Length: 437
Image (cartoon, rainbow, N blue to C red):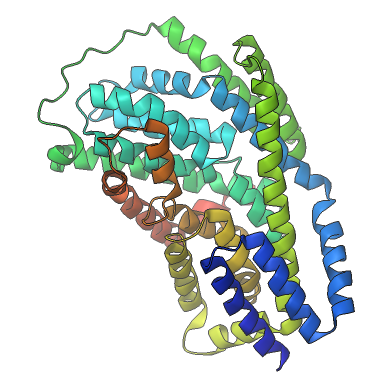
């Protein structure tokens, strides 16, 4: 077999292995080792896997992963998410569908210090859904709002997915974070517009028949300011330090983790064994991510050795498909994969294949990364996988709320994300104007 055929069969074999349930990291390592051994020799494959492990994991940059993960977990247990929702509830309670919009913006702010969509879904399913249903929202729609807005956790920096993309694309993590701000804000505004539009045109979808008969808890201006201090302090510390040039991404993660630890200690949120549990969970998440990055790096080198990316670039860019045809096909495949496997796995499978083609097409790889993250996040809301939806169902443990109901409630937000995706394609400066400052 030719190297191109070996690379092609390797891609097919990887998809089959994942489909039958093999962990993606193991599947990638197995396919990559076999591919390199067939193209060159077993000795070369053995030396290459050692070099990949050394090159892809020893860099100082990778310390950013456990630091941002730990910061997100500390913020989650310290009750900052509820305070953020309370603040926006107080500010927007007189606006049409104000609680829904409050949930979106609270999620956006919470996302700016956690970077993990599942953390947002867990927190706000317990905080926002009961409050929205108390005020006359249909439970199906309330859960859909939380599911939809939770995706902001991977769009608004810091974002774990953007860190993974930056590593695989060999781009600056700081530039990727900057590029996520514009699209993240556009997405939050699009979600808010969707809620207002539905509240005015499809009231039966948003509100139940009884309407809002509950009274709002009075929160004084002083209480609002008090609840705002922790979240604003962390945002200023992390994002201000990062974009002001005081910290690099790893230092910003360290400062944020320390700030989140101080907040958790002041709030006495770290009871018996809690901190140890969070540290163990941080280690588990970090190890799983870094092993996946190592496996994806090996897979990428195997493909480069086979020549598959070069052949694909020639096929897409010199034929009738063209660069935009390749982009549309790539995004459609990612959205389809989102129905079956998780976000990081999608990126690890697709990027080694697509990045060389995107580079050959002359695409801005930062803009291409933003499009990738938005498309991947759509998969969090689409059946049958829909990780955010299942997270909400698990966190709420409400027998009256079916998984299918949450998917229906989240459907308008999938449409909003598709519109936002088209907007970013049509107006690339949404994602690229900040990095050029």
